[in-house]
Amino acid sequence: MSWWSKPASDTQVTHGDRFWLYVVVLIIMLLLVIPTFIVVPMSFSDSQYLEFPPSNWSTRWYEVYFESSKWMRATVTSLQVGILTMLVATPLGMMAAYALFVSGHRAAKAIFMFLITPMIVPVILVAIGAFYAYGRVGLNNTITGLVLAHTAMATPLVMIVITAALRSYDLNQERVARSLGATRLRAFFIITLPQIKFSVVTAALLSFLTSFDEVIIAIFVSGGANATLTKHMFSALRDFIDPTIAAISTIMVLVSTVLLLATQFISPREK
Amino acid sequence: MNHVVNMSDATPQSLHVAELKVREVRDQWTLLSLATPAILIIVLVILVPVGWLFYLSFVGSDGQPSLEHYRKMIEYKSYARVFMTTFQVSILTTLICILIGYPLAYFLALLPKRWTGIFMLAVLLPFWTSLLVRTYAWLVLLQKNGLVNEFAIHIGLWDSPVKLVHNMTGTLIGMAHIMLPFLVLPLYGSMKKIDRDLMYAAANLGASPIKAFWQVYFPLSLSGMVAGSLIVFVLCLGFYVTPAVLGGGRVVMVATQITAILENQFNWGAASALGVVLLVATLIVLYVAARLFKFDAALFGKN
Image 1 (cartoon, each protein chain N blue to C red):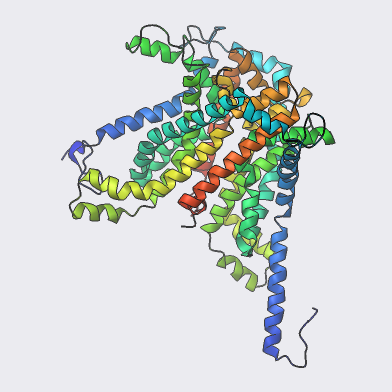
Image 2: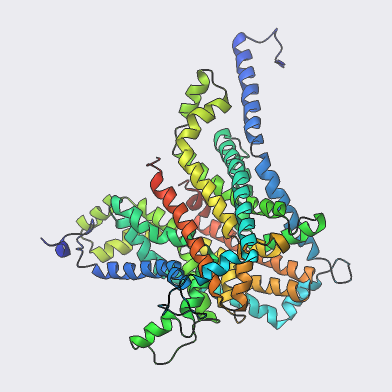
């Protein structure tokens, strides 16, 4: 029996019967992935205009990027803000997720709902709100202001990832440790944390990317010497198509691909 | 320990019960206090500023309380157009995502376990990539002498370059690409939960594959589809970057308008009022959906 006429599902359908589905899905997947990677060949073009495939290859746009103090400073700012956001949002989100999941208090659900409001409030509103409030307290154009805002955006994501991990983890193990005399803190660090550590790493990477890729808040509250990479990229996109953006985009795609593959393959099945 | 229980009329047992209760309550509060830093930051960065904007939206240009900004929104035709565009883009993007996302999620849910990881990357990779990068990629792909036009002319779909970007078409293509993972992931989750035996049972009882799909599988996948569509729709309502870049000034949505008001007129009252309307619209959509579909169960996996 060939693959074509083999039953493909629980009903009587064969692979041949639904070959159309495979074709449709393949096209959809290509449409999803190609735009993500198309910037890679483009960035190695020698031309001022974006042509595909490039007629001459060169690394000139990378040279422009690495030699421009404006782009370099923006990159450093973005990395700084991303790392600081990760360092603040991960423990904050983890503490909140653990507290709300374990306590079983009546208010826990309401607090959880409150803490995920940054995912519901339109980002543009958060951005102009922060811009206005920061204007009053002098936080505009500062790293601190940006880290605070990005932490508020990343904390709910961390909470959701950690809560999901705790849900598939047996909390009785921690109770056993405590009944054997460990404090809650100690029980958490030596029993629970090692078992959810891959989710914690995922949450941390996610919060880094949330900040590193964030555009709208950065457009409003970052500026001057502390403008982020995304802010400069956005203004460059609105004006004209600068091939330097392709080089920067390639680097950003590389960063997110590496981070994603790290979460997918380094972690053993954590269930 | 401060025992509130009177020693004289308490048996040792009830004493323990009371003490345990006190400890439990104290433990709960200690635990809840772990959430305070997160609560604090959300109050400071989200609640206070948004509340402030809410207040500003009710202050007229003369500094007195007024409904001036909201009245203008009803009177001026330009605002109506902005709201129309916003809803149009959001609804169309959601529909495109359902149309494309359903077969994709269905395929992923069918795959044997060892293949899922690899194919799932097609959804996760764009999800993890900066939306600015993806918007830029579409700008390049869709331009007049871009790859899409060249390819379409090459295979004879159309003869001369078609304007695909800096208009509604480009905006919808870019938005759908960015929103698709938000629909596919919850949809995939709900499809994975469908009991395969139900499909066997349907087939066994004589249903054709098509009938079994529409009468058994599809209704069971609806909860994920509704949750996903809702996330997409709500995100679309407040979206800024993609319409601003791929719309090229021709697709003016609420977020774009808010920025324009601030950039050109520096009118905080008008911008805030528009933001408040956007927030209220978002909350209404979520509330109605929660009422209709028990949305929070679908989102938080309590079912």
